[in-house]
Length: 362
Ligand SMILES: [Zn+2]
Image 1 (cartoon, rainbow, N blue to C red):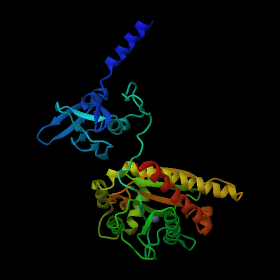
Image 2: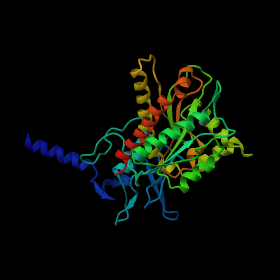
Image 3: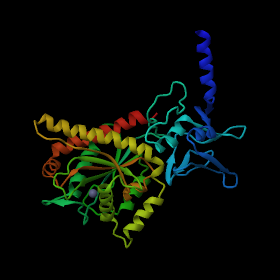
Image 4: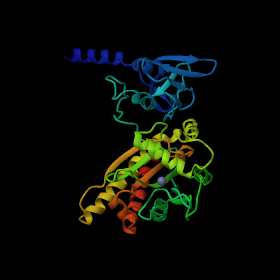
């Protein structure tokens, strides 16, 4: 019995490639990851690039010595670099391999290597810099009203909300700056530039939604993507982008700019975590707010979604765009005009950002 057990353990161990230390983490040669993922590795000594190819898979391009990768045109910043071992072999940590390969499949392939003691599930978020400075960007302003219904303008609601959120964030120890504190028009690229010059750690654009459907309701949070989650997200991005893009530029070329802009894509994973924490906090608070007042109905969690928002594209920091609620929905509109409701949501936004800081910053 004991002999058999030892034998089977040895057989299992020999079928797994041995783990190696890569940038202080457990990793494997890139060729082993590629073999398991059924990809072939092509190294180009001339360009220094490494290309991974497989049938029906988007090509992956990597640069040894850096954590950067392009996967089917999507720019990624992995949590560790592709390292070169003394014998010349390329090594990739398990965390890096998970980030790079696992999104290729609907679920984790059977037998996917995990270093001993590694937790399953998505890689935890990890910010490489402190989160102290939060830049709030109330959308629209001046001649750009945003969405408008029943004499109520998006630009006014988001400005009031930003002022309240700034107070809450300051009370939680953050430094806060706003793209605007008055009813003025600001082009989208200026908003990014202000955040960058101020060296913001987080960028939060604030908006209120509208829909031709009177029943559309609730909160959604966006992160940047060249591809929209669905038609509704695409429509919203075009609307928010065109509202302030008043240059003689076509919409198509504005979107093209976003596609080629790599600034935000390096922070997408962090943005996704930030968006998840903020979204959860906002929806939970809105629901609690209603329950506490004995109000019927629900506050819809419309989730974290992706769309090509211009205002997020040039932010070299985790960046999200929050659509607090729907001005086209009667009850949302009523709530969004109440300071007491906005105050609760402002507190919720600060709590979401705080959670992100506490969990993601080492
Ligand atoms: Zn807006």
